[in-house]
Length: 400
Ligand SMILES: [Zn+2]
Image (cartoon, rainbow, N blue to C red; front, side, top):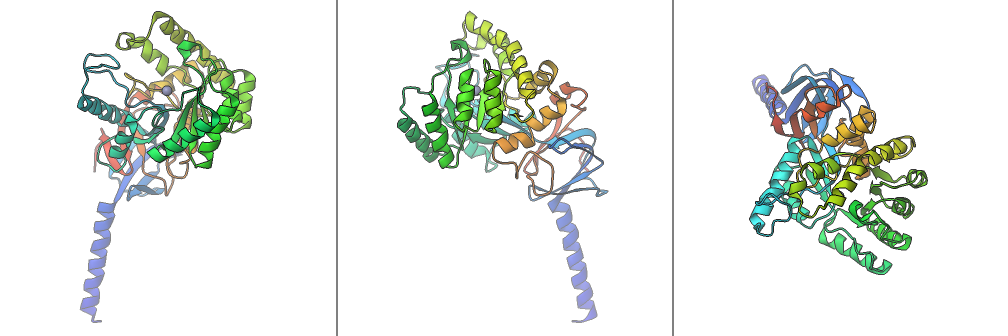
């Protein structure tokens, strides 16, 4: 090979390297970075390539300058109802709403949720979530990554064998997890509905099929669900110290909603036609109970408390308000609250090796907020940058 040819080849390779470097790699310059696992890193740049984090280091260049902001992994909400919305008449369950109007409302909720910094959500309770998931996950529609249980298993008249059959049916229908109601709703007293045998059937069958189980439970149903090997317990009010200990022993994830869901019902009461006065009173009374429960749960160091909001109609896009309730009213340390929606939530979804932390190889789900949530938890309301799988969906900072 002649010298001139060799020199030309060298130049071409050099140009290709520069071109690929510029088009293929996005550099996020940060000064304060929460890694999702409880550490604060300073002056690190996140290199993003092919939708994943390629490296975290000091690079000197920047595609997006996130200096002065707090940068962290995209939040994960492990309990949402992303299809719930107020219809054209302003109320939940508008009978005159068309299927098209409903579908647009789901898409709007997905957009609002993503804009608020939530890059993954677990939707626990509707067949509608499937089409939404399947439109968003390939990138056709903007929204958080959605995992869904489809229709929950709630009929306590089912025998254990019938429950196993239901679990197998959900799996065939494409559910990512199984949602089970072990108790009635809060406004019906949160009474036990499913027996230990029924819960063992549901969670045992799901486990055998490789599916996680998320259980709506109050009072003694909390301990029963944990002992039955279910993955996660939601709500948990009226649980005793013993129930909390059973969850810790069985490594059950606990998702105690302490504020947003109650406040949202109370603030939007005229939009929920089915809420009567007694129920509204019960929801208001639940708030201090939930704060106490969170404090009791935090007193057990091995109990893993994850972040889930139970965001219903009116709460999509306001998911981060739950952080404020947990930290301000429940006295959860702010860093623990952040981790509960990052690496811990990811672990609860069985996705700890893909999302929820900022490290090489993780999916580039990255957000930035204007302020420091560790000193002022209300900063969670000021999300100014959202990247999901390397694609920027919100940007109020300058691009270089
Ligand atoms: Zn719920």
